[in-house]
Image (cartoon, rainbow, N blue to C red; front, side, top):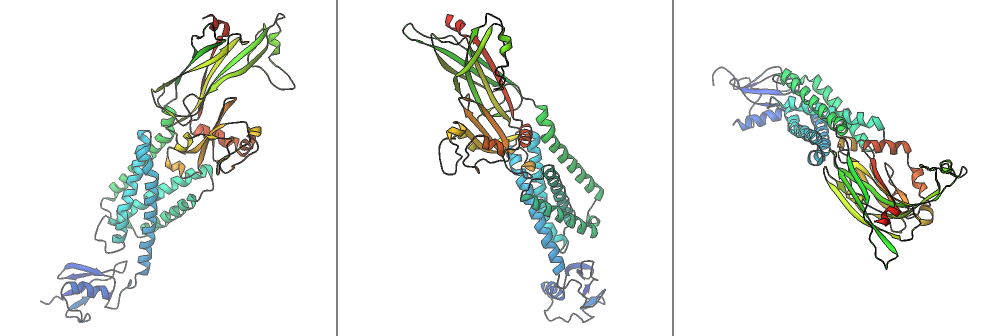
Amino acid sequence: MGIRPWVVVEPPDRRGLRRITIHGKTVGSAWSLRELRKVLHGLGYPDDMDLDDRARVHWRGGDSGVWPDDRGWRRRAVVAVMLSGLLGSLALHAVIGWSDALGALTFAQRLVGVLFLLAGAVQGIAVPAVVDYWGRRQVKLSGALVLLGVLMALATTSLLLFIWLQERELIPSVLAFLALWLWSLWALHTLIRDRVWRGIPHPRKFAAGVTFTALLTATSLGYSILYQPIAAPLHFVLKVEFGKPQTDADSPYVHVPLKLYAKNAGGIPVYLVVDDYTVYGHSAKFSDSGQGMKEWKGDEDGGWYATEAEKFVSNAEGEIIGSGQFQGPGSTLDVGEEFKKEKVITLPKDTKYETLDAHLSFAVLREDRGKIDEEFSYPKLSWMKSEGRYYCPPDGCGEHVIHHGKVRYNSNLINMTRKPRYVAAFWSPEQEPDVFISSFDFKTQKKTESIYDIYEALDPREVSIEAERYGLVWTFVNSNVSVKGLLNQ
């Protein structure tokens, strides 16, 4: 055995842990006398060994009664709070990054999603590191991993709160963001007070790596949200043409083919939110006096006015003689994709119309800005009563085919900081189509007496902002022909 004692118990460190050595070799550590006996039992020492026997145990920095962390409740409380915060932040990163990494349209958006998933993975590794760092510290990098996980939580929650402050909408998730943000401040303060960097090998390289990762994430996020949607413009090729009329001598009718065409010639795929083709028949009287130019103002009391005027055309009138949907709300038009459709317009041979005017229009939503739920593709009829569905009497609202569903922004960072947004489209053969995006879910208003009840519930400023935010734009084309010219064919 020699002169040197068998067992040496070192003084307590700052956490109250006492290192145990035998012949200069560390064999374990203990928080209490019970743990010391457990370590010695594992080394073959008897359970009833006299630990106060100076010939067998040498105590440094205090005898067998000095155990600052004998109970350890404070240390365990810190570990529990650290673990709960890291697990909550891990779940937050996973929710934000999962759908973006797998389903985002652009590479930059997917890269941001992957970065959030990697941040969640680092926090997952930091979870056992918390136990080790506030335990026996057998892994040198445990403190660095905990610090990195806390910094990621602080950065993400700060970003979420900053985005939320732009709208300041009352949503339950903001309480979770605020709680995690406060937790990250507390955790960072605890680690700084504990001087966690003392155990980090090459602290300067560690700081440089954290800074580079933060800059990469910020650059990718800014590119995906701001630059890329602006840099990729929309461009469409639209055509609407009247074909050669078909008839026979026994028929009093003329069938006029109508050819519709659309192609996405831009760099971004789009959703067709609502589309419409309408054919107008225009009739007019010849004005011998040449006073037609003065009639564009119409009835001053009625408040209407014409958008066109001709000197020798008087009392021009137009009415709808054909209308329908082109491709259908909820369908998509990918880059380079084209869509054709041909309809037949029926006219009597002795028609009173002087000209025919064909109008093709649709509203599109950029796929790099938002995603529309599949529910939007299924039409609902405003005049049909059904449980849990919107209804409006035809006398007050007319008759509309309605498409309604959730629309989500392409970055989950924004989705999680705002109320749900809904897109609603109204189509009728007798009226111009309409579409709006807002936080108003008109399913909650299941019955109205007038279509204007919905418009009154909308915030015009919000509708305008959401249309710009999601890239909702209208595109259209017109074609005008002479009826006599068609019949002469």
